[in-house]
Amino acid sequence: MERSRRQRPNPSSSSSSSTRSQSYRRFPSNPTQNSKSPSTNRDAPGLAKPRRAGQEDRDVDDPSNRPLLVGTCPFMCPAGERAQRERLRDLAVFERLDGNPRKTSSDLAVKKFCRTISIRDVQASDMRPLPVLEDTLDYLLSLSDSTEYPFQVVHDFIFDRTRSIRQDLSMQNIVNDKAIYMYEKMGESLSLWFRHVPIPIIKSKEMCFARRILRFFRIGNYKRFLLSAAAEASYLQYCIIEPYISEVRALALSCINNGGYKLHPYPLAHLCKLLMMKESDLVSFCNACGLETNTDEAGNKLLPTKQTTFCCPKGGFQSCSFSGLQPLER
Image 1 (cartoon, one colour):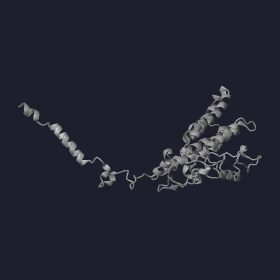
Image 2: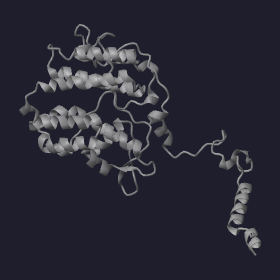
Image 3: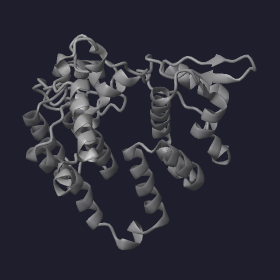
Image 4: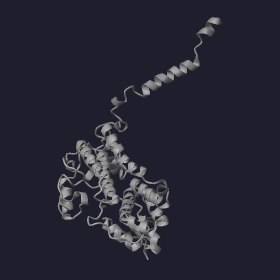
């Protein structure tokens, strides 16, 4: 009786071992050897995973997927941009040779910041390598103590050109210790100036508005920029920031065009409220940026998204109304 009890097989162990053996027979240890089901092999060289619409553009813009770009421009400003700006008389006072607004040199011209630039449209000859960027930053910071021109003129020039330096660093994916040191030097110059400003001025309503609107402009928060300008700007402040409103609107238009769903055009009525523009001005603004608009069956005007023709007009933007400031404009 005892012997028979000891020799009785364990049904659970028997079934589990049977299950394991069946599973081993059902699933081969090396799935790559299963040639009858190639669809399960996702890493096969002849097969590609399907991509959603717009995914290729996002992959290119992803820093981890960007092609390696190493700048070869030996000057502070690429030769092509320098010649174009000479033709357009687009030279800052620090860049003019002997005061001539149509003449500059490689020792004076500094590359301007361009918000809508894309790495897909950039050549290596337009990018400055790290040593050239370091020399350019040293040159710009040497101008911060200039007394020949007002502080606003000096600050605007240094602010724009250092933005261009940061852009070149980012597009070449330069993230070493030298780049970090350059970023630190570009915060310091403005901070040193603020230390000499009296506390009542720093805390004044006008200064707080100026710093807030500048922060929105720097980080590209177009909605807060426009809302703050409409709600808080005085007439004088509006006159000062007016040249930047069109640039912020172009940024918003670019974001909506690139981020929208192709099958769902963006209603111009909503876009008018966002950008605080009249519909007629908005249509002209879209066309100036290379975007087309259309009208649906109900008569509503729409902006088709995912258009690849977006660009900022070379001749600059025309002045458009700002619906939040009609009383000030009158």
